[in-house]
Length: 169
Image 1 (cartoon, rainbow, N blue to C red):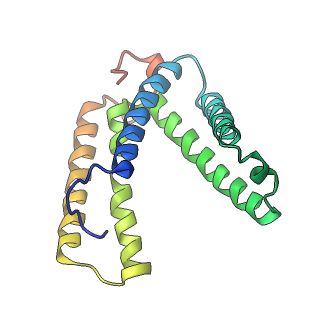
Image 2 (cartoon, one colour; image 1 turned 60 degrees about the horizontal axis):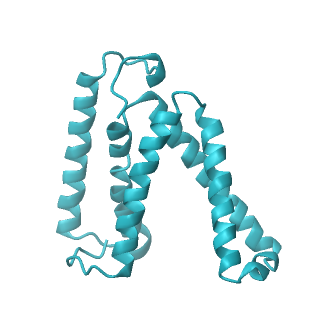
Image 3 (cartoon, one colour; image 1 turned 90 degrees about the vertical axis):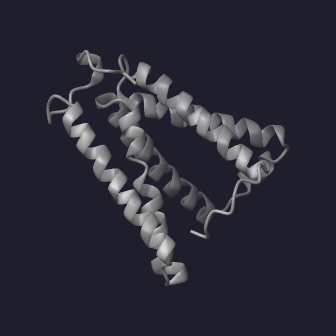
């Protein structure tokens, strides 16, 4: 959105890098687990474990009283965002159940394009030529990935990977 000015290797960038590594590991573990567990069950377990970990972190930091002092509006927003997160996780795990992890991961590429587009509309109200070129390249990449996927998959009907001999990753 603001333009890339190079890596600074600060704590924020390091945390993003670590989160990306954890996310990749999670996708591999989920792909394996989805051979025996439904995507809804696995997503529910992920949400419960994640909630418990966050609660433990808050408790270790000594901020547990702040959790219990949240008002109705704050709990409402927490629940709303949790529902959206659950929907995302169920969708992600369901996609992993039916397609290789590399393909499912590429479906997140348009998120950057959508973010830039929404920023242009609601925040900056302008689009630079660099953003237009970047958006065009994203679209070209999406088209290439979709065309490769169409040639790679033997059928337009998706079957869970546990029922096929297709590539698991």
